[in-house]
Structures are given as C-alpha cells and as structure tokens.
Length: 314
Image 1 (cartoon, rainbow, N blue to C red):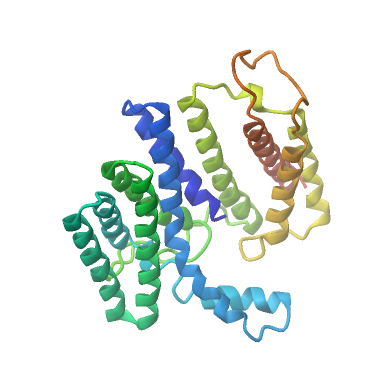
Image 2 (cartoon, rainbow, N blue to C red):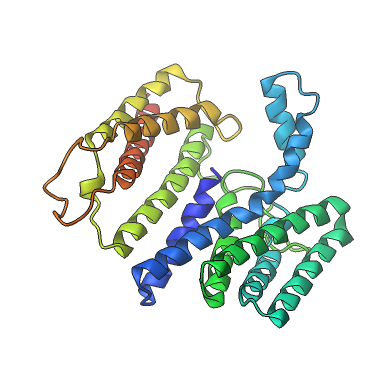
C-alpha cells in the first residue's frame, strides 16, 4: 500500500495548486513532486532485508522482514517534526545558492544528529532519509521547478505520509524526538478483522480516486470516456469470499494480491483501437494509459464493494 502515500500527496498538492490559480503543467508538476516526496519516509524499510538472512521458508521470511523492519519503521522518518525540517531543507537546497545549500546541509546534519542521540541505527536511517529528500529537491531544481514549489511539495508529501499509516500498522511517532504519543495503537475501523481490512483498503482505493479526479479536473477531462467495459470484471471477485480464508490486516496478502490482480487484468484489456465512446471529445488525443489506469481502478473498486457485500450477506 506504499503507493497510497504518493497518490494522496499528488491529489493534495495538485488540487491546491490548481485552486490557487496555477496552470495545468505547474499544478501537475507540483503534484508529481509531492508524490515522490511522499514516498521518502519509507526509506526506513530498507533496513528490513537484514532480517531475511537465515529465513528457512517464505512465511518465516515474511515474519522476519517485518519484525526487523519495524525496529525503525514508522518512527523517526515519519515524524512531523523531522518531516517539517526536511521540507525546509529541500526548499533551501532547491534555491541553488551557496547560502541556501549551506543552511540545508546544516539542517540535514542536525536531523541526523538528533537520531544519533537516540541510536546509531536511527541516525543511519535519518541520513538515508535526508539524502533522499535532498536528491529529489536537486532533481526538481534541475528541471526548473521553483524553490518555493519544491518546499511546498516536500511539505505536503512528507507531512501527509504519516497519517496514511494510522489504519494499517503500528502508529507512527508523529512528534519524534519529542516524547509525545498521540496514538497508542492503530485506528480500527471495524471490530470484525475482515471488515476492518476492507475499510483500510477502501481508504487506499479512495486516495487513488482522489488522484484520478484531481488529474482529470486539472486537465479539464471527464471520467466517463476513460472507463472501459473490462471494469465489470471486478464484480466477479466477490467469489473470493468462498475461495479464500477471511483476510485481515495480519494476513492481507492473498486478498490484496487477488483484488489488485483483477484490476490489472481489467487494465490490460484496454488496447489501442478497442473502443471509441461518444463522450470522448474528437479533438482529445486518446490517452490509453489513462484508459487502462481508470478502467483498472473501477474494476478494483467493484471488486472491493462486491466482496464486501457478499461477505456481509453470508
């Protein structure tokens, strides 16, 4: 579900930029950049493969991966304090001036020093985090994106990320290094484990819809022309209720893989020349990648709803 962080940041940043009067190109550039920044906090999961050494089976490897990763995952890099400092550093670095870059380096060093006061592993993870943030800022600056836009995109991406994790795992350390615990455990949407998973997965799908709707609005397009008939395949996923053990957040993989697979199959059915609809403007060049993405998302949404209805009914 890592993609949800990027999609949420894209929707927020591009939507706000468009409402603020930015043209489509600038709004989309800021949105995409925010989405990339939105992935940066999960650099802390790079420590998890250490736990794979010696794993004798796939279930053991899965358990070892997350047990090792969770030593530092959703801690320092998911802090609003750390994220805010990193966003400022990104904006300063993107100014491409010596004073700006010196201040960015100083601020980044301070972030790493805070981690070092905690543990060497935390400092290493924070060093990787600020390096990733600065690298994204550098790439954006080289493409001519203004430093102000880089800072705003970084703020949206880095500060929105932790809130996407409150439903699916251990609560993030929102105010690290301060000893302030806002959430003691993850937010449970329903006492039934399967319905709780469906709710969390539904929120993930909703972020994808937000990104699609914002993109269509910014580019002045309508949704209907991009939904293919293959989307109806999603309804068939309801049969998974009879075939799979009831999933939960502790064992979501077969359900999630199946639902995503249905969406991917529906998207793969969209081919050049498959269809023309009366809703598509004649002067709009066909965007088959968008066709595939939207059709796959509709199929995925149908799969989630159909599965949920049959699960509750049975």
